[in-house]
Image (cartoon, rainbow, N blue to C red; front, side, top):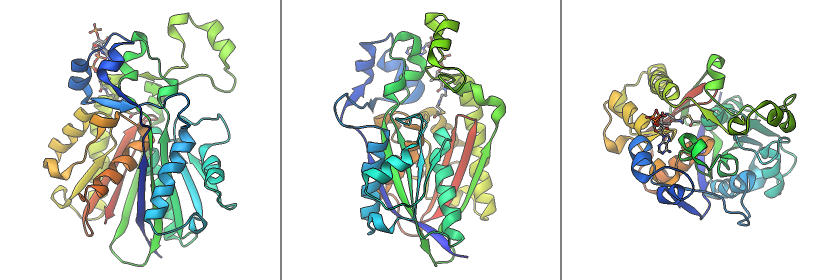
Length: 335
Ligand code: ACO
């Protein structure tokens, strides 16, 4: 049995910054409400004509991660692409990245686990590497939320939270015992699928039907979120899955050097930080700058933390995510 490690990280966000004040110009909201509830100050939105899309951003982040791993695209054996906002209904973004990066006929797998997508993808990569089937797996999380949000007052409780961007990691075979990805832990609970969802259009329920069935003010092709219910479940599941990871490896919260929570909402991260008694140095947050970028949020945050020298060799890094599905997961990494 091999071990696996993260050998390269990269991220990309569009240049276009959208502040809370910018949003207040198109919907009834304000900076104070958004910052108080979510901690978000600004986010990035793809601008029409800037050339970005979910897979373009994913490819840009991937290229950086592959370079930093001192590899070339020819070294990658598998692409795992996580998103809830693919630019095509099918095929998925993985094959598009493969084409953009001029890669050979390696497999490309798409993961549909929303905010937990990157942790799920990392777990898939980890299994393939540990069994010896693949040597280098590229894991990408990328989202173009701005293209699918209701940017009117009707959609404000969801639209102010989400931003665009991409992050990527290369998972590489290693033979160093006790280091790298120590374990991953995944869960889901379909009973709450509709509490954070985008129902239509879907197969058997296409746009004309949806429009005919619904009054103009209630069209279900914008995301729906039961905010308080999501919040309550998130804080419980984040805590459970971090504990599960620590206990599996006979570790305690005091062993954590860096917790990178999915950037759902700064208040959720702060709740988890307090619950585990962690200092500000032990938790990384950048939702203030990017909003919630769903599958991209953990790899963007992990990349920034690493770029800022906040993750060093030997550190215990914990990734934890919760989101639509509900799905949740954690990864325990000895860097
Ligand atoms: N600006 C101003 N007012 C707003 C806005 C806005 N953007 N959005 C809603 N409001 C209003 C509401 O209409 C409501 O007004 P009312 O009292 O007159 O009816 C009031 O603010 C309070 O609304 P609530 O929805 O009750 O506000 P709450 O305190 O629950 O905060 C929030 C909403 C921020 C969404 C919160 O529930 C939350 O953070 N939930 C977790 C959501 C989350 O983290 N989701 C992402 C995780 S999963 C994933 O990443 C996919």
